[in-house]
Amino acid sequence: MSRPEPDVRPITEADIPDWIRALNTGFLRTPDVADTEIADRSSYLVPSRTLGAFDNGRCVATFRSFAQEITAVGGTPVPADAISNVTVTPTHRRRGLLTRMMAHDLTAAKDRGDVVATLIAAEYPIYGRYGFGPATWTTQWTVDVPRTGLDRRWSGPEDGGRIDLVDGPDVRKLGPELYERVRGAQPGAVDRDERWWQVATGAVRLDRSPWTEPFFAVYRSAGGEVQGLVSYQADDHWGDGKQPLNTASVNWLIAATPDAERALWRYLCSIDWITTVKSGWRAPDDLLPFYLPDPRAARVTTRADWLWVRILDVVRALEARTYEGHGVLVLDVVDGDGGG
Image (cartoon, rainbow, N blue to C red):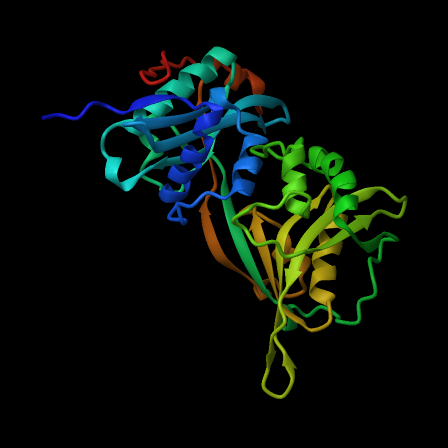
C-alpha cells in the first residue's frame, strides 16, 4: 500500500522545535533541541519563507530562504533569494521533497521580484538540476612565516597608517560601513546584516557552536580613516626545545585599499611566536602571495566552489551588470522550473 505524500508547507511558530530537530538530523548533529536554540532561531526565522515537509505530523525535511543583496559586475546591488538550511532526513530521501520545496520557494522569489537565487552547496551534484551553478570560487592559503623573507622586527605600517587591537563593540560600529564600501567594488559579494556582525563578535552566540573570543585588529590610514579590519585566532603550540610553532587563523579580513590589506597581512606575519598564518576564505586571485618577498611562502591548501547562483529574471540580471563594449545579443530562455 502506498504511503501518503508528506505535506510541504511554511512552518508555524509551533513547528519550530520539530523543524530544528529535523535540521539537526539532516546535518548529522544530535537531534535534541535546547530552549536557547529555539529562542535564537525564533528571533530571525521568517515563517513564510521557512518550509518543512511533514509526514504524520513529524517534520522530515527543512528549507529556508531570506532576503539578500548580491553585487553585480559593475557594482550594482541586485535583490536575491538566499537559500539555506536544506535537509531531508535519511528515511525520506528520493521522494521529491527537495524538488517540491525548491519549486515553492523559487516561485515565491520570482513573485517578490528577486533577480537571482543564491546558496552555498554542501553537495556539488544536487543543485544543477534546479538551474544553479557555481558563480564564485574561494581559496585558502597557508603562509610559512619564516620563509616569507619578511623582517620580523617590523614595527608598523610605513605609509603613516596604524594598526590597533579593538574589541567586539568597536567592530560592530566600524565593520558594517567598511564592508559596504568593499562589497560595492566586489562582484559576487553579498550583504551582511546586523545579526552577522553580532555572531562574528560574540554578541549573539550560537547554541551549537562553542565561542572562542578572537582578536580584532583595525587599520587606519594616515588621515585616520578606517580602511581594514581582521578577525583572527591564535593557538598555543610549542615544539621540543621550547620552539614556538603557533598558528594565526584568520576568520575574515576586510580591506578597502591595497595598503590596508598589505598592512594587515604584514601585521599577522609579524606577531611574535606565530610561525604559520592561515588565510581563511579568500578570492582565488587574492594578492596575499604578492605582499610577501617570497610569494612561494604562501601555498594554496583549499580551492572550492563557493556561491551558487540561479537567475530568476534574465532581463534584470543582464541589465544590472556593466559590459566592456556595445553589441547585440539574442538569447532564447528556457526555464521550466522558473516559470519561463
